[in-house]
Length: 168
Image (cartoon, rainbow, N blue to C red; front, side):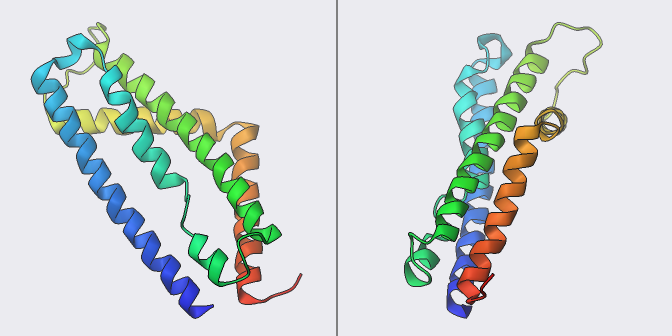
């Protein structure tokens, strides 16, 4: 188990590093977008970078694939359960990212005089966080999200036990 878990740890660290680069890429995309077109052109060009990068972070497509082929096998029921649960949680996360993007787009194009002006990257970041938290709160309250999260946690526990050779 030690080697498999160490490899998984390294893969997780690599994924976080990739996410950091992706997040920096989003910031760069935003800066270039605003320098070229500003808010007048809409934000559709930023939809994919925002949502896809978040989906990749929260959908562990290959995080345990190596362990599956070197450990209990890629067709074990626990591994297959984990894959299904990961995909479903990834779908829930994609809903959050899409909703956050929609909220951010609406806020940035709003003509509401009460809306705070966005005059810095810090203000844009704060607005993005606000939109993301609101989107998360909306989706996290749903039964589908609770079931997906519950199933993912149960699948991870089962898969870890299988890798450790623990029987139920």
